[in-house]
Each structure stands twice: as C-alpha cells, then as structure tokens.
Length: 116
Image (tube, rainbow, N blue to C red; front, side, top):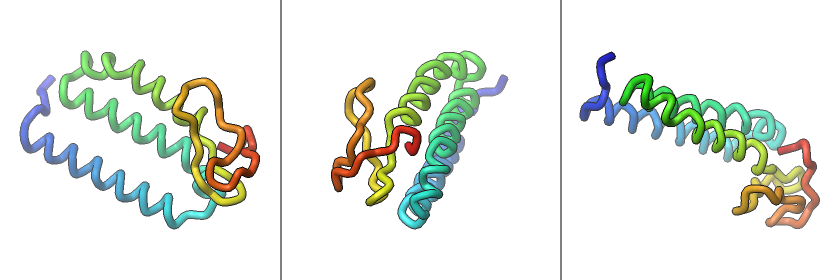
C-alpha cells in the first residue's frame, strides 16, 4: 500500500482536522441543548474514525491496528464521562476516569445519568 506520508498529505490532514474542529465548535455553540446531547456521542465517534482513517493512510494496516485500541478507549471514555447539564447546557466531566460527575460544575444542578 502506498504511504500518504508526504507534505501534501499532512497539509490535507491538517485542513480536514481544522474543518472538523471549526464545524463542531460552531455546532456546539449554536445548537440547542437537545441537539448537543444527541450529537455528542456521534461527534466523538466520528472524530475517532477520522483518527483511525488518517493512521491507516499514513502507515497502512499496521498504523490502523496500532491506534485502534487507544482510540476505542478514548471514544468510550468521552461518551461515558462527558455529561451535559440540562439546566445551563454546560458540558461537565471529571479529570479522573471512573468517578462520573453527578452535579454541574457551573450551576450546581444534578446531572441526569442517561443524559450525557
């Protein structure tokens, strides 16, 4: 398989990541609370798939399988740990892996365990 590790490919990867970041940032700022809650797991999964795609394009099958488990763990943790407050709409998460937040760090409201 041909490696895409060239300056042009790196520029393309940077441009795609920038477009994804700007798109998600604009969506996150403008979308309603319900839309953010619904889209968050899909956005995290999509970003992980893009990382795996870039790993495959850069190094081939070896890069894909090297990145697969860490990316899957990061996706699962982001989906599990990130909670969105139903009162103020702020995303809350802990810096630790297992203790999931129960209260919003911004307004103090209790977070719904299935809402994040």
